Amino acid sequence: QLQLVESGGGLVQPGGSLRLSCAASGFTLDGYSIGWFRQAPGKEREGVSCISGSGGSTKYADSVKGRFTISIDNAKNTVYLQMNSLKPEDTAIYYCAAYRIFFNICVLSKGNYWGQGTQVTVSS
View 1 (tube, rainbow, N blue to C red):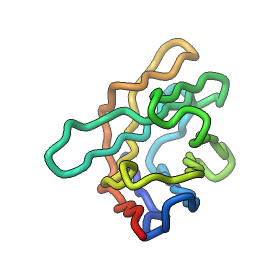
View 2 (cartoon, rainbow, N blue to C red; view 1 turned 30 degrees about the vertical axis):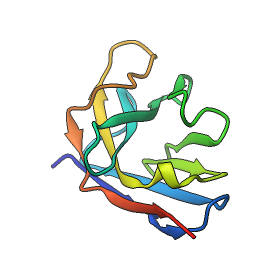
View 3 (cartoon, rainbow, N blue to C red; view 1 turned 180 degrees about the horizontal axis):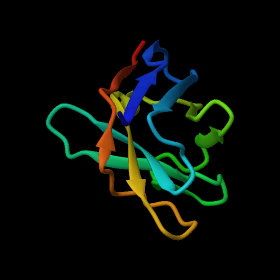
């Protein structure tokens, strides 16, 4: 079965850092775009970042550009999101999702298969 499992969320102070992990099973990341999304209460789901399975294509939402870095470890079939300089407005449930692609360009706004989410709270 195709499965995505997020981990690494938690409580952090403003300015702090977290690294989220998205572990994939049942498929290999090659041929997929893996995206990180977040949703805060009362707000629309937002595409945060994406990476192609090859690692050759990345995109970031303007709100996180320069602070977040997405990466992939193909040997572990895992995608990471390093989040630095965290702000209270980054507080949300973070999800990873996989989307089939046929070109080596990741898709920031789409997902076909979703993980269960991990809570990130940025607060003093």
